[in-house]
Picture 1 (spheres, rainbow, N blue to C red):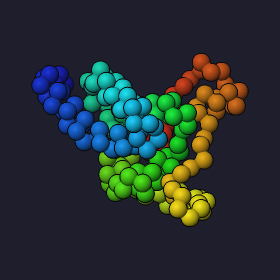
Picture 2: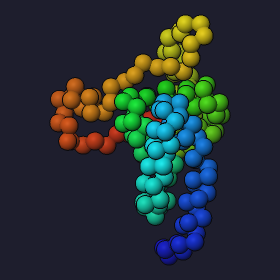
Picture 3: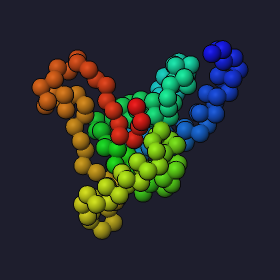
Length: 165
């Protein structure tokens, strides 16, 4: 396979950035202070740009970037949302369609629909006037590893059900 020309890679990165940045920023803003959200999104796109050739040659660049983004936001917020919570936040709070959520996260639309349905079935009623997308915080990956008896420095790879990887 012939390597892509730099201009093509640059244009494809900017297209990816233009498509994903608004949703990534809105997601981060829903969970972080405004300055923290800006830093998280900036960090993500620096990471994506630095690894663009590898990212774009992978199976699903959106899924790769989404995994990185959720890790950064989880670290900065101190809480990790489940895939169903992510999908519900996108759908109910940020008003993205199932297809938009699938595009941003790299998931199949059927997966997003299933996650939304599961979240609706398991969501506990909230007080009148409270946010329906508020969730109980889950322990971070480090805390989960410690609880499972795994050393902190062990395999830190996380899979996110909203991704195909």
